[in-house]
Image (cartoon, rainbow, N blue to C red; front, top):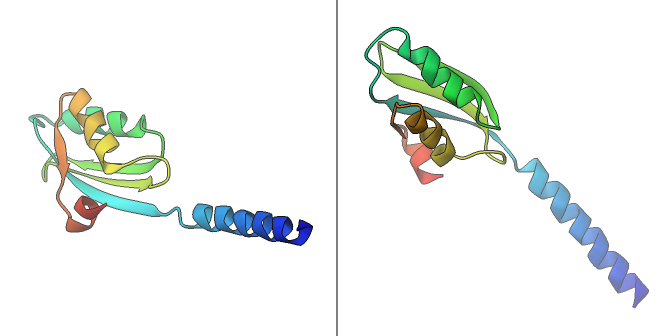
Length: 101
């Protein structure tokens, strides 16, 4: 009986370690609305930087996009788009991989 308990506990520990290892850095490109001046990207970038899990955000006024690198265990694409929307710049993912996640 004790051997079974130890085996189950050991397997649980392995599964927890694997779950952590599955965490991945992801990149999504967001189409960002309402950017009408060259200062707007700063506000968008700051709103994204405040989201836990965001590693990097590059915002282009010319392309009206934000390329965001984030930890998928700490945040989601929905949280990223919510952050830009709260700042006055609604956004949505434009790459198919992000839409599936």
